[in-house]
Amino acid sequence: MLSADGTVALSGTEPSPDGHQLAYATSASGSDWQEIHVRNVDNGRDIADDLKWVKFSGISWTKDNKGFFYERYDEPKEGNTLTNVNRGQKVYYHRINKPQSSDELIYERKDQPDWLFDTQVTEDGTFAIITVFQGTDERTRLYYIFLGDNPKKPQLNNPVVRLIDRLDATYDFVGNIGDNFLVRTDLAAPKARIVSIDINNELPNRWTTVIPEGKDALTSSRIIGKRLVASYLQDAHSSVRLFGLPQDRGNIRRGPSGGAPGGPSGGVNRTGNPSGALPDTLRDARRSGFGYPFLGELPLPGIGTVSSITGKPGDDEMFYQYTSYLSPSTVYRYDLKRNQNQPYAIPKLPVDFSQLGSTSRRRQASRRRTSRGSRWVASMPSRTFGGAVSTARRGTTRECSTRSRTSSTTSSPRPSI
Image (cartoon, rainbow, N blue to C red; front, side):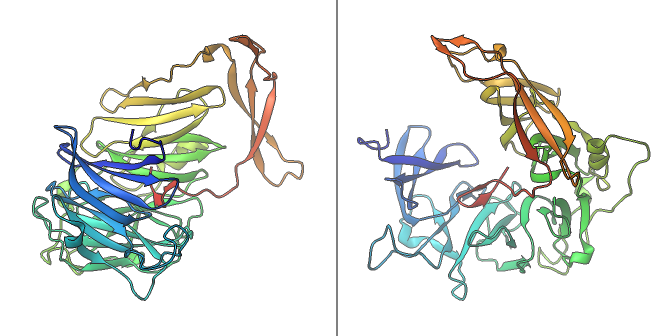
């Protein structure tokens, strides 16, 4: 336990790239304030590092395993630390085995004290992406720091580049292929699309749409293995679709300017839709940009909700969490090479969920016939489990509108997939 009285909770974890160290955050008594500690995985003991006054922060290691980015506030000088309004969040870099007082200030905005930041290092270690939030507004800004071509020697003192410095839409960083940033955005696309932005030619009219907006809401996306994994909300249930990545990724390189805007363009081209009549889901999916072919849909166990999709660009597998009206939350493993889907962590419960029935989907027009919706029917015969009688009724229904706008899942308050 983290405390004898059980009032300290684990609020976040992030392992170092080499897996020998684990940075983890704790919070006490339900407070938003966090403390970050670092544990040596090899011996199971914490080192002396103790970072305080952390709130609404992520943890992102540089690829040299020597430190990580995080966000914090100045230590309160007066008043109640639990009720005071916090302003002026800053981005810091902490080096392992160093006191917090020596942490390097990376970025702050004294003219915007209410802004929040989330910093993440790209998988290739060449960029630190800073997403800027303004309160609970879904719209964001997107900045970056070029850390250099050698991930083992990150250049933390390089300037912050304001790639998208306007509050007009959501901009979620998905990943990068060289100098091309893949970004999920709802700019001119209420149900979201994915664009490729060449940071050496970043004007919006030069963006390339690689996954266009479709009839279903694109809620999140990330690069796993050699796939672009996109999660959609389709008729109030999850649909996970897989797209390929440009095969000749070596052609998308940084210009001689060393990462500053103004180098030669390395963007990808755009293509039209393939011919042939397809169902709506496949037709939307096939409308992808050149080099991002639609590969298929992840075969889910049923009609339900997918969350916590995890994996990295170099992996041959990914994991996700699935739940539905009639099945508990279960972790699944999907083999990207063999296209095999199998349960990985099944909760042990005193109920045989296979006996509960099934979930089906029916579509019907609304009374005013202005839109269409999905009616979910969970057929659950009455049964006795452990002496208790199930009160579920056959034909229980729940209606869900398909025209509501969705937003990406956030975590304190970070967008993620």
